[in-house]
Each structure stands twice: as structure tokens, then as C-alpha cells.
Image (tube, rainbow, N blue to C red; front, top):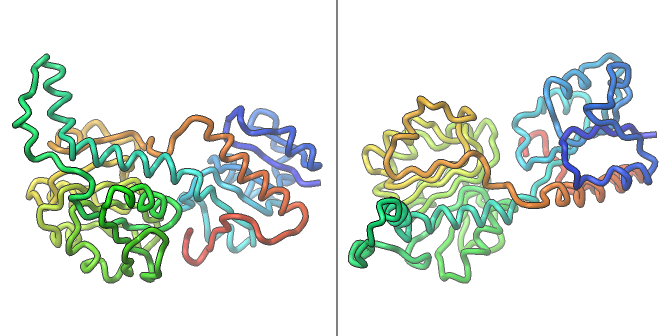
Length: 317
């Protein structure tokens, strides 16, 4: 019998469906130290409990299904060494994140910061104040990351007549993108960009990818957005870029340190929209997790190796 430890607290996860498959289910409330070595499947990852189970003598852990798309927070080298399968939730967050990115863009493009300030003052803003408002078809987008989220964002933008190019590790073609570039060729990818979006996974190659060199290559970029990983962006470099107007606006959902410290200069920097790592959230997220996990669980139990979203340890995603 497989022993499943469910770590996220979400009522939409159907425990009965897992038990009907002959799986014994533990939660953080029901598991005891004597059960640690028996856990074979883990849904979610929660330290220190997860690492304790992984390092328990005679541990039997075989498979970790994360509830996130990114897996940079996992001890990947150790999981690889122990031949533990890892799958992620890539695809679940594509719709809410892409729609949130659209919101960020329109927030600045339609001059909502000014509208909201004047609303608070009960001041009717004259129409001539919005002469520099943009529409989506007027600005060129470069999206770093052409996975599920990047492709969905490009798809959403397409009907608006928006010019969208993508950047990925090798420059391979990706659905919904007019053109793609390799990460190493990023300068060509941003040559005509008005908006840059980071949705790349965090790896050794993408850590501080957006650094002083990157931002210095920009010239009055209209908007930089980060909904990928906080550590992909060197915060000090972004602050300098905003001060020097290499970047005119920024929308940031993820940060190098979270929660973002009260002392961070980002809070006081003009033309910066800060959100609390919420872009992936949506109603009934647990039901979406359940759909992917249940399908994977059924395959795992029948020794079908074609599980969805298997993580490549060498690539880190």
C-alpha cells in the first residue's frame, strides 16, 4: 500500500478519491514520527516536516507532487540522488497569472494611478490629462519564459493585435509567439520591446538574470513586470534603472526576500506597483491541484511512467 502525506490545507482536495484507489492518507495533523519512514508519496512540500521525512532512516519516499510550478525551493540534488520522482503543477496557474499581467499592463497604460489618486481627492480629471494613455496594440511585448504561463499570456494578447516575442533557454519555437530568442541572445529580443515580462523558472542561469547589464541595455522601457521568481531580478539594479528611467514603470509580484521588507526602497519608488505574490491565486485552486494530482496518482499506481509535469533535475524545472 502507498502512503500519501497531504501537506496543503485545502478542502477541495478529495481525500476519498485517493483512498478509493487503495492509498493510505496522512495529513500534518494525523501523521506521527513513527509514520515518517512509511510515507511514499508527498503532495506539497512543507519544511521542516518534508525534509525530516526525506532524511528519516529507511525512508521510502518515491514521489513528490508539488502544488507550485516552480521547484527551486526543493532539495533537487538530494531528491535526484535518491531517485525520487518530482512532478509540479505547471499549467494550473497560467490563466490567473496571465490575466493578472494584463491587469498590471492596463493599470499603467490606462493611467489608473492618476485616476485613483484623483478619485480619492474627489477631483474630476480633465480628459486632456490622458493624452499619453496607450492601447495594447501600440506596445511591443517580450516575454521571458515560453512555458504554460508564457504561452497563455501570448494567446491572451494575440486578439488585441499585440506584437509578442518570447525568450527561452534554446530559442525553440513556442505556440502563440511571433518569434522566439535564446536566453543568450536576449539583447536582440528586447531591441524593440516596450514591455518586458519575466516568467522564467529559477535556475542557476536565471538567478539575477535581470541585472545591471540587462537594465542598462534598456532605453526608456515602458514597463517591466516580474511574476516569475524574485531572485531572477537584482533589486538594486532595478532600482537604479527606475531612477535613471531606463525603466519607466514596474509591476512586481515576487521579490528576492518575501514578505518584502518595510524598509525596502521599492515601496517608495514612483511608478512601481507591488502585489504580495498573489498573481497565481484564484477561486477553487485546490480543485485544479486535485485534477492534476489524481490523474498522476492513477498513473503512478499502475506503474505508468507518463505522469504530467515531470521535473527535469538537470534543467531545474
